[in-house]
Image 1: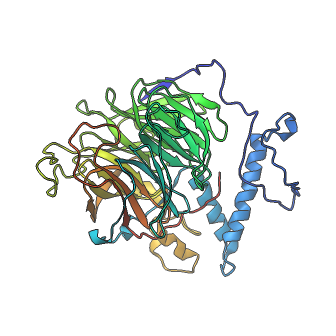
Image 2 (image 1 turned 45 degrees about the horizontal axis):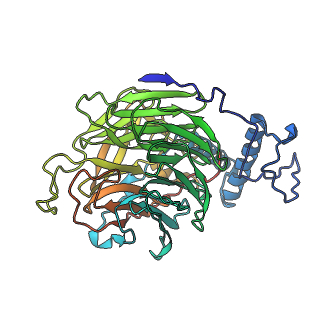
Image 3 (image 1 turned 180 degrees about the vertical axis):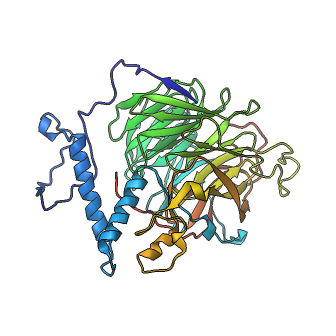
Length: 500
């Protein structure tokens, strides 16, 4: 594990606190009355009194968390204070990326006939994301277009067509390679081969502003959990940190690794993890506050590149490679703690002789239901596999109401105690392993360029294309470019929706 410190190119510290924009409204308490005159103080920061200190922010967020937790407590609870305590503990752990839920065992087999396909892109579907309220899907393609879909009735709501390459179009003029949405669905971001990032209004798909910092195709972007901080990476290895709605860059790491960034995933803390391409297969953990880049290797000299990355929480990272291998890293280890090869079948029986691949497939996409043991990967042959992240029992203990003993989750009790059946785990582990979920595989065809779970656990959405999202190195798959919705129907509810 290597640590690389990078100085900022402008020679000045990016951590300026002169402008603080917080979208969370303050909640009045008995100790302090909050007066609101309805005016927004976004651009007026001339007075020092208007600057919120870190201490004041912690107090405000603590009051907000207590108020939210009190509203969620059922009046029929026998011990409301115990319920409140546990809920606050859950929210604190989730905010730090330490909370873990076991839901993969609830998966039931899904028939191929129940999979729903949506068609709208004229070329390969390269990326997609789902709004946090699980109502809309946003997709991008090589046709430079952005499409908004309604999950409820599977209709196409809005379409934004891109311009021709080199034109003065206000939209993208090249393939849309990556897309992401903030957890509060306030900002939708897209990165393109035209070297630009466009921030959209998710509701209307109107352009809010454009970010021009990268000098090569923007291949990856992601938002920090429950925040407007955004991370972006490009083919030259540059990683940029943004704090929306400010258009000025917060931090520019430059080409710290000098290796292309193929995928990136934001964490709960001010950090992100990225996947490196050809020339240095591995992942990098970018610590914004410390201005440090920590590199993790694969310990495999035959490895080409890590094509995709997903953070289960702030400690565990899963990456898929071009050699059909799945790697699992822990933050405290410089090399993988688990490796599975092959992750997908090397060939597929339903592909004809033109597109059949006797060689190993790529792991082209990976995703998961955040803070749970449910994961999914996609390959270059259209194969989708569900995985369960298994933690050693002696390395984790249950997190439930009034009990911190291993094995108490199976006990029957009051309504409050029944909440422990979701197997809340506070993760303290040194090792873990990945297991295939029985009957949890689907053959869709084409390249699975993107995967995403809905937060309610009802859908796994896959972006299918005839080509890989970043190039045309192989014969086109004889499939239709589509967005496939797989109804997994796993009951799950996030512990909290409070911004921390």
